[in-house]
Image (cartoon, rainbow, N blue to C red; front, side, top):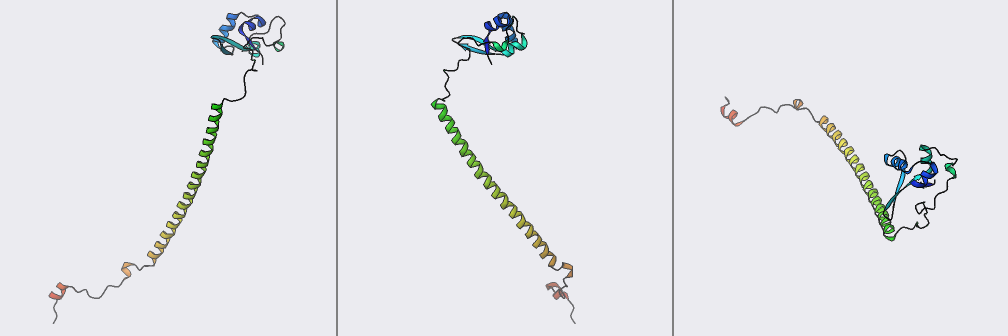
Length: 163
């Protein structure tokens, strides 16, 4: 959309420049602040001006033509080609990103392998516990074991009465 300078907007919308500058400063209208050769200027969108200040004097905002000002948005001097250092930096970052993604994939594969190993170990431990419980159940109970004959010890032998 077309943008106007403060003085051009003042003429087209019949509003004083200080009023527009005050509205820009307070934020009731939004504009783009540009610096050119040490001076700051504002560029205000026509639709923004039409929203706040109704057009007067028979001018319709859609019929405005942008000024021939150097700030009017003449972008013919701007190139779409990136500087070499920026392009090199982008390429380096792209390579670093792909390397990081590869490392992340390898780490995820290792983690999955370790998870499966841990699960296998847990299953092995559970099987070992079940086998241990089965073996312990198969052993005879201590009270079920018959006592071994007469216990004879040294003192019993010594003090026993044999006739």
